[in-house]
Length: 191
Image 1 (cartoon, rainbow, N blue to C red):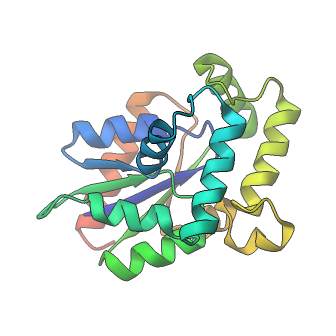
Image 2 (cartoon, rainbow, N blue to C red):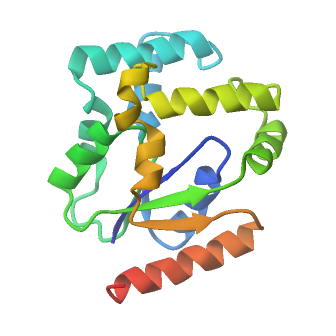
């Protein structure tokens, strides 16, 4: 089974990755290649602005699907169950669907206030300081990596809206695990 999990910041993607890894899935993060490039260039991960610029520069230099191409290269030969995390655009999804048969997209749906509370607890360097910052970040996610209103048709919200499946993630980790196990079973049965 090949899955892509998408969701807005704070929706629970990292928790979903942990759960699926426990279930034997190979977990591939879109950010793995970016992290390697940051390290190779000596850019500290705490430099949020430089990190975002590098992401844009890589896409401009190598194409909007560069991260998807790297993801495909990282899938282990013979891997039966793979979950891909952190996809941000339809360009990336188009590339993955061309190269991975049977790929299914799962959207994690979580209300703004819940996401903000979670982000407040995890304290990543680029997490918003208030709810208004999170609302603005959602607008940027809608516009895609180019931060251009014209790119809205390629952004994360389009991926979420057009996902094959959706899981409402408003509860506990155990509830999310139960929902994923139910979904995996349903997909396996062709539903």
